[in-house]
Image (cartoon, rainbow, N blue to C red):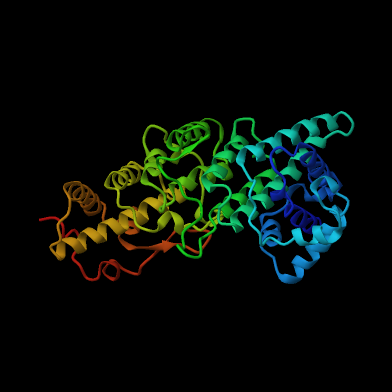
Length: 397
């Protein structure tokens, strides 16, 4: 039997389990999560594509198979109130709204997994890692169910904060299977809403998670990332999600600020992100202080195309838009703020003094992220094509 089908079918029962149903939770976890050791040994490092295929392959025929599987496995699970197979079969369809998901409940499940796995280790060595892998398979499907309901039952920023426990210094995120599962979860959090066309994961500067303002939580998370991640790519993507362009600029200011220097850790490339890179690029940055930080880091070569390719791409894209927008405003005699004028003057002086440098060409001729995995930025053929025949450095008198 396809174990992906078993997990997918069984997890539709999860929302019916309230936090105080300890006996039911124990039986559920024992039957499903701890069946992982029975899986093929070569599944300890399941590829990202497997998860994607398993998670997003729902169709009517597959749902019918899931229903039958659920009925077979859970027809005798009387503590959940299932008295016949037809009830179990009806629960296999993900059309109803789950109502009892909480991040604390998910952590309680993990605590149970660790205790159970540690106890089993005495009888069967290596049981704990197997149980943890089973938990993350379960967790991935659980969060997928929340996403299907557009976060109505559990805020996506709460899920984000909950995941921090796995990225601690002694967290499980370095285990290959867990690493892959976390990548899939991050991609789920970036699922786009059909109405707004923006990711469902939204942060509000005034929101609270784990009994503290979310911006303070993020500050501590960056400290952990800089101190213990050693540039781990999944951890890096995790800390980058609050910096996406549709999120409040306060998070980008924290990440890009000189205090943390989080931008210097790791060498992420836009080709291996688990979410679309355009979320870092659009809409264009409007914070002049952030644009000034981008310019400073590029000018001092703290971020470079080879050493920090994703950071370089982000900075070049937003400075490119700023430069050409300011040129157009000057030509059209539209007013600019004093900070904008000051930054444009610095940028123009730099570009003029380094006219033949690669960085200058990238800022002037940026077209988009390059599809070639060996490159970072795709360029327009010439500057005039980008600037619409505006004279270069026209902001200078």
